[in-house]
Image (spheres, rainbow, N blue to C red):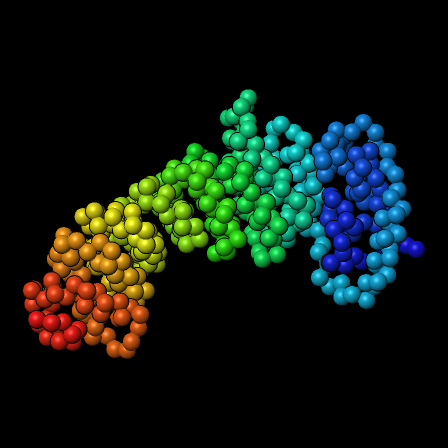
Length: 420
């Protein structure tokens, strides 16, 4: 029976050629025991003059090929049972397919990787079809092996470092979807995350941005990834967070890089409670407070959300209250930026006044206008969680603040049910 019909999208992985990732028509076994489609492995050996196994990169001496009749019969049987399937969604190789195969082979086999990586980065910029083809060719796995090499290289660290920077640029070109969970799991392996984290700390401006961008793609709000973020933050320590905070606050960094780092920090802190302590130790509270006054609306909301997140820890609240501008910076944004910023600001003040209600803190809230803002929020119609928190704060400390009628109207004590 001739195998000339189109392959189906859902064919078993073992039926696909490791080179093209397409259904094999003439499977043959080479000396390493790996099966390939004859047309692809012949091109590898004869056209590209390779003397290695594409899948294992083992050097080989014999180019002999043995037909895999058993696998061919299995493929034919499978095709017979799927002949009526809709074939409209079959993936087709991109126009750069052969070039991708060649470049990936050169990257794996050659010690001079930088030029090939730069060319690959350029090709991936040509469109989504090329990127999909790259993923089908196991390109991500090839790039990850180069990135991880930075952790073990000792003889030629400079060359490996440069190759790693270029590899990050390639990886950042790739987009991930819900169907790429297997790729994301490869990226989430400890060695890969540690290597990317190392480049975040030591790499060039471009490499640091690529590192942040890749991390952000990996940092889904998914509890299944929490353990990996705990690992990376524990292993790299506060230096990891210092690097992120530097990018967020560095005026020389692009707006895109700063925004990307801000989003990444927010994603990590929301999924890993252990990381909050490290971020506090890295000076996160101080940095964020000082960035808050000049931030625009979207940036303001994210910075306040980060401050709120850190203030849910005792060390974070202590750092916030010890900073001379913390309460003033947050209260100034309330009622002046957005409902979201106001809501977060009330939550921060509620945390501070509930768990750190020292006399100095309460006087500072009064002096910087935070209490006035809280009183003003009582006049907003309707009921909400934010309004309920405002009432709790005022009831909790109203007896102290009512001594200052200019900031705390005398009639408010009756509304709150405060005794004289």
